[in-house]
Length: 432
Ligand code: PLP
Image (cartoon, rainbow, N blue to C red; front, side, top):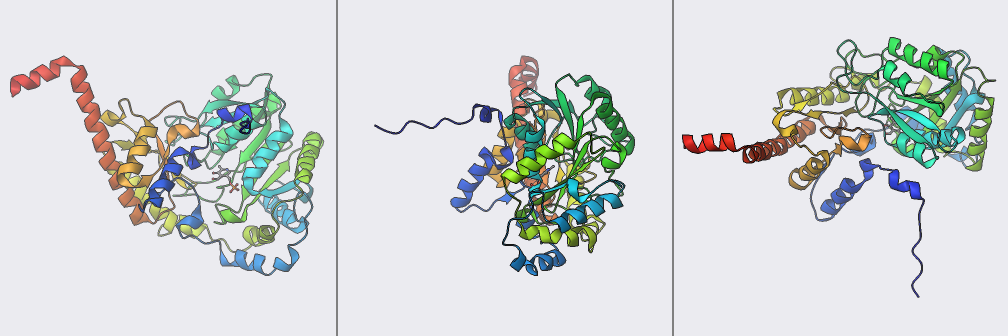
């Protein structure tokens, strides 16, 4: 008798992570067949030749001999103190090492903090588009994602993809427990102005919500954009601020992230205890990378130059913005921060556009891998995401290939339109 087929957790059927999903699997098959692909699906700086700064590497190398034991479940005390001092320095005077949690990347802490917070059926307000781990972790911890729109046309001072506080508040129900903000945003690159954040903080105060602020891209900013941390605006409100080494410090593989709990300690004492317990159950985070945290937060700044004119990320963004400006089919809200662009397909090519079919065609015919916009939990299907990590000239080539595919998509859409409307076809015959 063959063994019974193993069943898995039912709610996994609700979870999508297409950044490493079906298209990425097809890309691996094509590579195995010898094709050379340009893969723009993951914000993984090390895969594009970026290196973690040398002073961070030295900080770890010098301490390898000290990395054998488990640490405290919340992380090395000195590393937590470095994180707390960084937060005090940017306007959260009550930040303390006792309320810092170090994890295996922000990813682990997103999961852990939602597990600490949610009971079955509790709701979490999430941005749409979101970074899909937030939806997945909400679902897998028995919660329900409720999306607030950050639509391309939502803007203040010309910037799009901003949330509307009125819409957010209308979504609050007696089951709502938290509001998640991703700022600077993945995938849109939007940065949220202070006045908007203040309005969202006021909503959290009125309804007793935990503010969960994913600020992992906090100093990846372009063209004068500024970043406003939420914790200083939240004051005594419970607020969890996430940061890490993966993006700003280009050390994804080290798996170092942190979450800083701020606000009135009495209000979040139970939550703190829950986080501590869940942290203790997994013993501790990877230890070596924790030794780089002090150097990262208090040593030389290595990210600003990359984002400033002449810097590699700045130039990559410029090439993408210019390519899209020149495109017959694309529109872009230029990213103000983070490592991505989230263009929209418009015009004839957008008629009946299917972002997944487009991404597959781009992969199969032009050897470029992008992520369809609908992977980020949006109801529309005319966007896709690219990373800004390749060399600028490679990005220019990517957009030449994208344009070729969109020309074909537009041609097909024109053909379909002509076929379904007899009048222009008759006219064409008459001219012929
Ligand atoms: N949050 C956002 C918004 C991200 O874009 C990512 C990774 O791309 C993460 C969290 C996860 O980061 P980490 O490598 O620290 O787990």
